[in-house]
Image 1 (cartoon, rainbow, N blue to C red):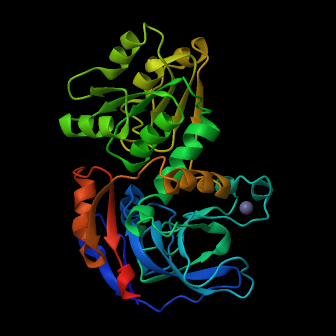
Image 2: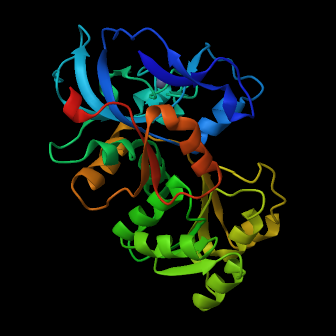
Image 3: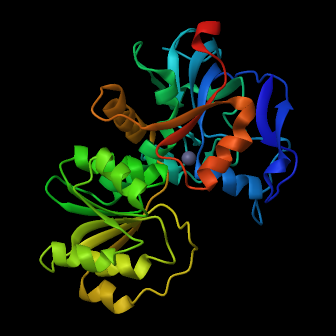
Amino acid sequence: MKAIGFYQHGEDLNVLQVLEVPEPTPGPDEVLVRVHYAALNRLDDWVRRGWKGLELHLPHILGSDMAGEIVAVGSDVEGWQVGERVVANPGWWCTHCEWCERGEHSLCRSYAIYGEHKPGMYAEYVTVPARNLVRVPPDFPLEQAAAAPLVYLTAWRMLFTRARLRAGERVLVVGAGGGVNSAAIQLAKLAGAVVYVAAGGPEKVNFARQLGADVVYDYHHQAWWKAVYSDTDKRGVDVVVDNVGEVTFTHSLRALAKGGRLVTVGATTGPRSNADIRLIFWKQISIVGSTMGSQAEFRAAMDAIFSGRISPPVDSIWPMEAYPEALQRMLRGQHKGKIVLRVADEAHR
Ligand SMILES: [Zn+2]
């Protein structure tokens, strides 16, 4: 079967290849899924470049998000049938460690992510444990379903489980281009929060408004941490979502109200912070980390989407073979919403 991945890590996109690899066989607790659509994530870029300590079985297949249909079920799988349309939680967990027993799947001591530590979803066929699946309703487009798993799962846990965002609270999302931030804007609005966004440039400002943001600052022209402070009568916001990291961390602390929570799932500008610790204790701020999420959180996030309460924005759809061009679009920050790969047409089954 065809898949997208690489035989060696590299900064350069020319290490990416259309791979010809054997079709996987489902284990007893797994299903085999024919992939119709897959979606790009920033994680793809980190994995291709590689980092010290990352040891992958090569060639490595990229991709964490897919939607498709079940074509075979393992011997121990119950409750799933061939032909069902599904998405999958992109995390892998062991089911029996102390964190798994508490339902905290993304804290599993053996936790792994499809496309990162495990072979990914940019392939004609993939195997995933049946415990990871959620059904896609018959009338829901698979290209939009494929855009949902990683970012909405991540945003759901980050906002509701970790930062405990509640209706009526004020939340500031730093950045609007990335998938997690876009999902966070939509989910925060759905939860009844007042949503402030710092976005870069007029197109991203408009995009944030389309997603439901109440107040949007253009960080090319405005010191958003000062603007949000004055716009909240010098109170600040209850929650800041900061996945930018090094460049913005101290500004985000300044934007918080007393007793506020800063939540982070990433650090795109770098991992080091010179945070002013006085701000943390004087304002009694909580700094909260989050990553991915449990199957219960995945079900909740997918339910918000499949019931039509929020709609994942799709930027563009590309043939699987055009993955390097699609990735270029993401790396240049030109996209608004998820970039999707067409792996097989539903009509062709
Ligand atoms: Zn575990």
